[in-house]
Length: 336
Ligand code: TXA
Ligand code: MG
Image 1 (cartoon, rainbow, N blue to C red):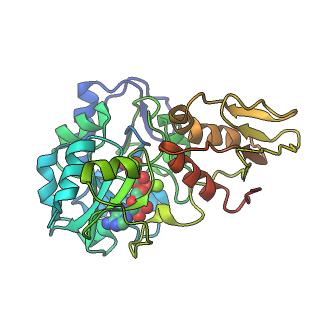
Image 2 (image 1 turned 120 degrees about the horizontal axis):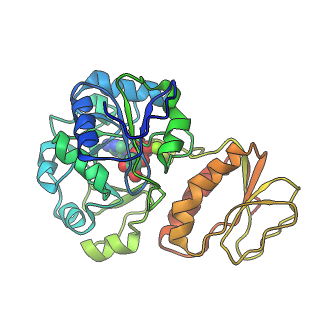
């Protein structure tokens, strides 16, 4: 495997510059059953050939994830969808046409090709075409489905940089086989919207940058909001958590009785409380989303005991941000 910037570490190789050669070597690695961590516009994924059971089993080992949690199959173009899914409703096709490549995963009835080791034994499969040039080049070169969860240990924050992937799982990768592709920071920063498309109308299982409003506009259908029976690990109450305790503050009336030395994340218009360490000051919800995980991670790198967060108010991607923050705060507790 060629590398522009092998950090010489005992762990996996970081590839800072994804040339055509590097990408075709990574695709070959996937064919041989290796793991390739790659950038997407949402977060970094830990990829394996979605038809290779032992490679997929390796993903579960590296993540420390229970084996019955299903994986998303990433494809490079819409024409591959029929290989993985059957009985696709018209509204799902409309969503695919409008939002792929993009931060949206569709849960569809699985085909024969989507085996139990991908779907966790369920009759459905998650599919996504990511909007990231390196991911798309890798998918084009590989020419098959790449199974990829977020490239973090189970329950931890998703990585949005190659360095964060290395910190999360580098020690569990095989330096001689596995690869981390470096495509810079993820633009969206929160995981894809997961939309179950198994009934007459769509249902959001995980909010993301593709919002309910956008889905209703494309499909002309009202979104189902009741809880599904489907299993999705990102739906566990405590998930996406840093090591620091996360405390959520009321966005309207933030009472920041801060202990010195805690982390602080809020939109730029909120001043930093005395003694707190500012971890992010985004000027928009999009910037809040793209920087959130790296800010939480920075709190952990600094060994902060707690991080106080004023979540964004409002709709759009702010809904996904609040969803992730509530899960991050589950054990730390919410002050609201
Ligand atoms: O943005 C993303 O979706 C990223 C990038 C890498 O694509 N991937 C990601 O994968 O977040 P993961 O595995 O960390 O989260 C995917 C979620 C999990 O909670 C999983 O349980 C759920 O999708 N999922 C996958 N297949 C499913 C299925 N057939 N039915 C219900 N949920 C499913
Ligand atoms: Mg995940």
